[in-house]
Length: 428
Image: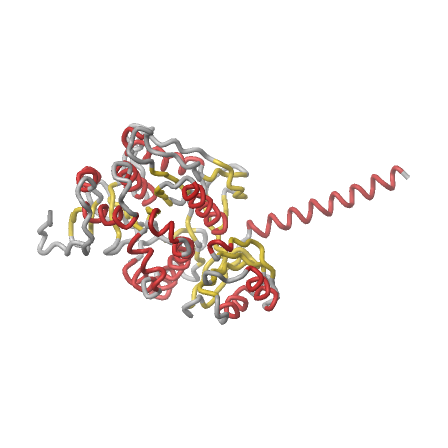
């Protein structure tokens, strides 16, 4: 009898362990999926098998979304109705079909995959998410500004990003803590999902809103977003178009969240590392090129919701090498502000390469400046950042924190970006 019970226990335990293992493998092995996004553009990207993202119009009921999920043969996995954000489980292999059906709904405003974020060459079974508990400027200041750093993969990258913020933030010296993100790793490849990133973003907004604080969010992801598997090593126009579309898919989710909150539109500044958006992989070798964001941002602005957020709440940061040249890996465009690769505050003589270390310089400057004048809106702060940047050459505007701190003491007047320099003349 005892032997029979033991045998049953072993069988049940083994079965449960196998189910857990298969679910884990489901996360670790993303699917390359081609689908038509909400605008009808064809996109090929890595996504979590059997999961799609949906954003809906304000006041759409939860029951309406659940009914819609049932109609396409799926179920709601995660719901954040206050922001109109949902993640659905659909039949594996039918993600593109589900997205096409969801696009037809009268209350859906965006639909995409639950994208995979990937980092290679890392060790450990679980990684840290540098989503900080919100820290505030010094108590003696006239106001306190919240600061959050979101970095899907912590370890060295997240700590280095945090050290750049701290070393440039002045006397406030914000405290950034690390919490477990639940990312999984196998054979040096670590993966997480866009779902985790959005949940952390919304958590940050809700905490700052509850405490009635302005908020600066630095997004420097220590991962390549949406790895694309190319069929050939040569770089093609089709691949470039796809990479721009992939970049837009990632940005639209962030913009969906901010556009759903009137409070966020007034009080939240997003400093985002321009990065390279996606990478091509051919026979295990990365082929990385920066992409032109001008056409991508222009496309995003065709949606009034995104246009408002991009012009009031978002700054993209690119990277310059020590010679003032745009780095090969950085995305670029007229609305990108550049910063030089900084020295590692923790390691003498070491430069930190990557747009991940450009955005935190802008974050630190904005953190110091906004705490001096809490009456400014997020739009005011964004304009102060752009107004204080200076042209190094045609198409290259460089972050200038000292000028920003001076500029913030004056009334912020809304105006267009400064014109391009002509024949090498730098506008002051």
